[in-house]
Amino acid sequence: MIAPAAAAAPRPDVRNWRRRLTIFFGILGPGIITANVDNDAGGIATYSIAGAHFGYSLLWTLIPITAALIVVQEMSARLGAITGKGLGELIRENYGLRTTFYLMVALLVTDIGNTVAEFAGWAASMEIFGVPRWVSVPIGAFFVWWLVVKGNYKTVEKIFLVACTVYLTYVASALFAKPVWTDVLKQTFEPRIESSAAWILMIIAIVGTTIAPWMQFYLQSSIVEKRIGPEEYRYSRWDVIVGCILAAVVAFFIVVACGATLYPKGIRIEGAEQAAIALRPLAGKWAGTLFAFGLANASLFAASILPLATAYSICEALGFEAGVDKTWAEAPQFNVLYTSMIVIGAGIILIPGVPLFPVLFLSQVLNGLLLPFVLFFVVLLINRTDLMGTYVNGRVWNWIAWGTVAVMVALMFVLVVTTIWPGLFPAAR
Image 1 (cartoon, rainbow, N blue to C red):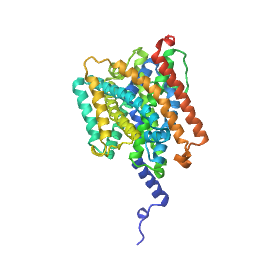
Image 2: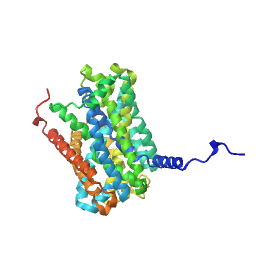
Image 3: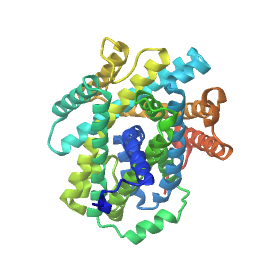
Image 4: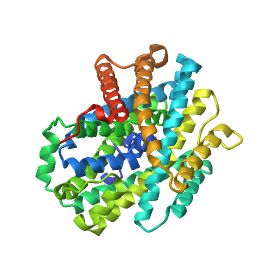
């Protein structure tokens, strides 16, 4: 009896497609997690303010910024996959311990300030739901500590990927806001440039919150710990691209949600928690609630990643064992550093009447100072044939990479100058 056609073996091209898809989902993780965690409390606040103060007029900036993010993240992923080493280790081996030491000190101070900001976002979002910070902060701090210190890499990565899906709440918030989509699309693809100081500084803030120094260290360390090599690199590259695009989509809908509701009413805000509260009477209870829930998820998500990125970076740079799969006995420095950053970040938020502005101010300035140096080392390393072989940048990709570095240097310089000397530029009309 002849077997039915349905029982026939799959064609080779179908088998290859299924195999590639299986490999991709196995590789999936580092790129998506790194890009999405950058939509943290500070990022959400920046995009919320952009929508509330400027409507849809800044949506077009997300297109070139996303392209720059893809370039930078792809180079970090390639460095990790081809060399099998973290960025801190590569900088130490190729440019000396002294350079690495100062770079790590700056990264540590900056990330402590950023960790404080994440716990501040977590506390503020929980207060919207009626939970006081003296309850929410210790619980959140214990959870992120237990998750990483007591877990293993595969489990932690799966939880982080689930956390990434919660960012879809911002898509829902934008839909509840009922924007005029023709206006949204028009201003997304028709750039409009203003000359006010406030508009210029908002552009700088959006760029600064999209590409952060810690991202390059964390992504490369994740690639190494997941044992992604040259054979899997092409799949990892798509993980990075997809992650960057998803992060941009989330940012897009945050701007739309606030631009459709707060901007027409002339409501000025100073943070993401204010946006969540203001959205409720304008776009409905669910829009504000989902926005606040997204802020809570993003803050706690970033409070897990930022200390982890710092612990990876410093331990690799100084030659200590590092990794989520390592026990306390195997990697004591890694676990102590991760634990200390969480204790410090959460502890500062619990101090009654603590002035958060100096901490946030310092971390903002150091982010601006540190990022160009990190990008400079990434581009130098990616062009070393002794390290990368045939995986060095091509001519066109190098132009894009160095152009991205040049733009970031210029923008970060302006950001630092205007932060230190705010009176240097005339006030916006």
